[in-house]
Every structure is written in structure tokens, then in C-alpha cells.
Length: 141
Image (cartoon, rainbow, N blue to C red; front, side, top):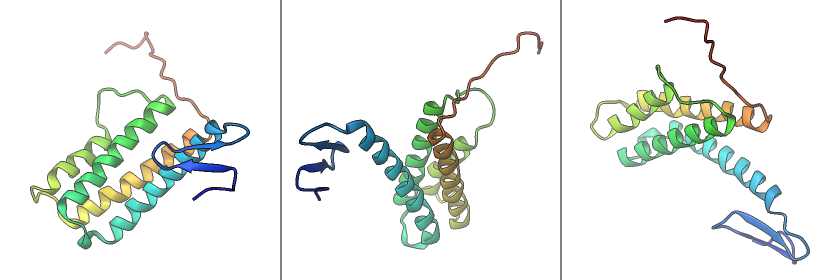
């Protein structure tokens, strides 16, 4: 739906353009915010209607959540590294659903955990905070 008679939005590219000036940067930021908040809402809604989703839908939603968590972490500057990662647990849950290794309560918990992580990472990203890791060379292992 056009925003006014002189402008339009393309659904495929998420780019807003105006006849007079191109305002793509603002709209991309708005579009990213909207997509993220929409996805968080989708995860919470699906957590509350778990019995209406089949195994594929549950797995796919959690895989999308893990991908979004990785993307947001990268945008903030959080490096991937060794050690236990909660997003790996969410991904393991996603892969276990179709095999019947997770019940709906465990899947619901994974949905809500993923929604919370995405919300938190989105807040950090929106605040323009950057994370940098500095190795301490004086520590011996």
C-alpha cells in the first residue's frame, strides 16, 4: 500500500522510495526493526499455540531464530568462539523436534528463550553499542 500518492514501498526489497528523494537508509532501518519485532511476536504467539503447529513449523521457526541470533550477534560485534552457547541448545532442540526427542513444553521454552535473546540483542543493536573482545596475553592456561 503506498504511503502517499508520490511514494511506494516494495515488499520484496523492503526499500522505500520517494519521487523527489530516495530515503532507503531510513526505511531499511525501520524495516529491520519491524521485521525483528514481528518475528519476536511470532515466536511468542507460536509458543502459546504449540499444539497447532506441526514438527516442521516448530523446527523451521527455531532455525530462523538461531540464524537471526547469529546475525544480530555479528552486527553487534559478539564473536563466535569456544564454549557453551545457548543458541546451540536452541538449534539442538530444533533438530530434535521431528525425531520426537523434545516435548511441547521443552519446545515452548526454546521459543520463549529465542524470543528473549532476539529482543535483548535488538535492544543492544538499536542502542548502537559495540562489543569488542580484548585478549589478555598475561593469562596462562
